[in-house]
Length: 124
Image (cartoon, rainbow, N blue to C red; front, top):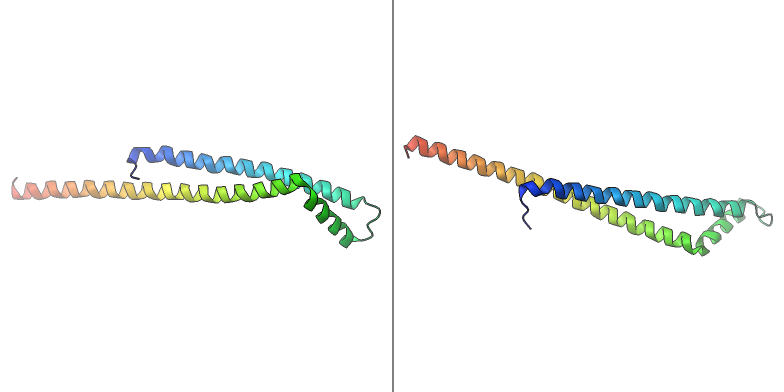
């Protein structure tokens, strides 16, 4: 797909906006995960039946493992992280395409100038 030179800035801006949107979604999911981990910590810390840190850690792990919202958030975070990596790759691809297109345009201008100068020397 060949894009006109003047279309690249808008495409690059749109791709950068997509990366920003994914960043925002990732932060929201991370907050949810932190909140759920805090709740699991609270439950295990104040359970009087647990005798030591190893038991508390095991209880925390058990609480998080069985909490559906936490598991969904972790899966969402993994998906969003992969989506962000792909969006960044696409953004870099567009930036590189733009650089190549600019170089090709400069080369074409240089060729035209060289051809014009050659014709002047010959007297055409």
